[in-house]
Image: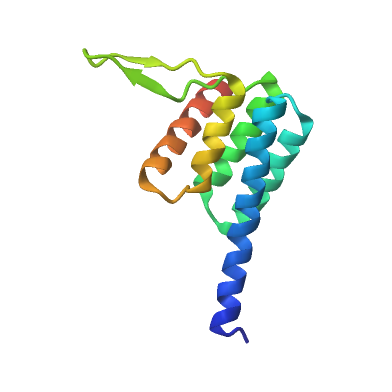
Length: 131
């Protein structure tokens, strides 16, 4: 039987490894770029953690991200747009490693409403590009 402190401990163990892994992957993407095999393996490992945390959106976007990297050797996903004064949207040109690092940063606080919307934008863009 688990007491309250044990439940809290288990909860902290789920989030802490995920955030540590995200920090490692952000650093790896920033320093080594998006062609590192360690990056793809790290995303796969992070997806396993997301499965345990039962977050379908994060689980899906991580799978799509590593599939995109495997197919393209970069992360040139057009998921961020800027709007001009007339309301026209244009995709932002972001270097591949910065684009992936940004997505991973969003995942650090995936429960935040605005981050969640941007993660959904990445999911949609990745699905469109892959399928």
